[in-house]
Image (tube, rainbow, N blue to C red; front, top):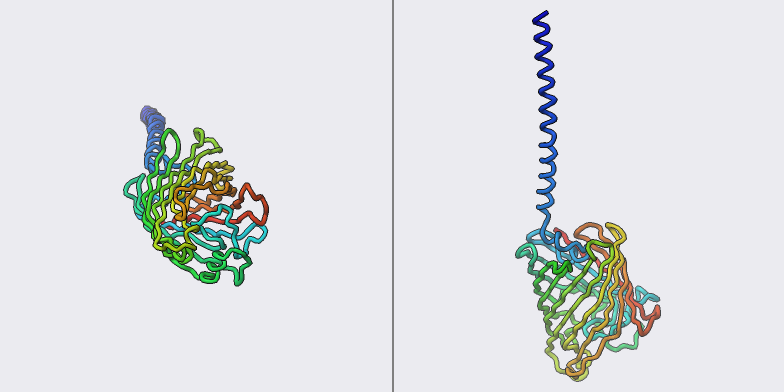
Amino acid sequence: MNRLLTVTIMLTMTIGNNVLAQEEDAPNENRSTTEIQGKASDAQDKADKLITNRRFRAQTGSLSKLSMNMSMSYNGGSLAKPLAADRPNIANAGDTTSISGINGTVNASYRLDKLNRLNLGTGLQMLAPFNDTIETDDQRAEREFEENKGDLDASNPYLSYTHMNRFFDVQTVFTGGMTQYTASNLTDVGYQNSADFSLNTMYDFGGSAFSLGALVLYNRYFFDKDVEEFLAFQNRDVFGFLPQAEYVINDMFNLRTIIRSNWYQNTVADVNDYEQRPITQSVGLGISLNRDVFLYPNIQFAYENLQAENTNVGFTANINMF
C-alpha cells in the first residue's frame, strides 16, 4: 500500500512537472516564431521595401545580382484598324516610326548594390509584321515600310545606370544612359546616338490604392547626316513633364494612365524654336502576373483629334527572366 501510494505520488509529480514545463515553454515557442518571422521580414530586399509599385519593380529588373530583362511592345495601328501597317503619329514626333511594329529590348542588368544597377542591352524591332501593303500618304512611312517590313533586327545598343529610392515617401526611379542608333528607319534620316535621362515617380498616399506621379524626361540626339530634306525630322532636344496615375484593383490588376503634356521638341532645322508636341494620353490595364512579369494593354489618343482612326493601340510586356 505504501509502495503503491509512493508510485502514484511520483507519477502525479512527473505529469505535473511536464505540464508546467510545456506551459513555460509555450511563450518561448511563440517568441521563436515571432523572431523567425521578424528575421524573414528583415531579409526582404531593400529595393522592394522602398519600391512597392508593381510596374516599377518589373521595369527595373529582378533582385538577382546579375539578371536578364526583356521588354516587348506591339505598337499597333489605329483603333479602327489595329493590325494595319500605318500607325498614326499622334505626337508628331520625329524620333518615332509612323508604321506599326513589334519592338523592345533585351537587357542584362548588374546590381552594384541594392539600389543601383548598370544595364547593357540592345533593341529589337520588326516593322509591319502582319502586313504586305500599306495605305498612307506619308512618304517617310512608305519608305520605312518598303525597306524594313517583316525584318527582325537587333538594333540600338545602349548602356544605362539606374538608381531606385524613396524620397519623402515618393517612389523614385532615375535612369541615365547612352544609345547608339543602328535601326535603319532612324539612321536613314541621320540619327547617330543620344543621351537619355528620366525620373519616374509615384506617391501612394501612405499605401492607398490610388497613386499619383510624373515621368520627367530629357533626350539629346546627335546626327551624322546634314541633308536638307532630313532636318525637319531630326529632333535634337526632347524634354517633358508627364503626369501619371494608377489605381490598384487587386494584387493582379491596376488601371493606369499617363498624360503626355508639357512635352517639347526642337529640330536641327531650327534649334531655337521649341514647339509643344500635341497632348496625348495613354490609358491601359496593368496586369501583374508576379513580381517579375508585368503586362500592359493600352490605347493612346490625342486630345486634338479624338477619333478611332487617330487612336493607337498597344501592348507592352516586362519580363525578368532570372
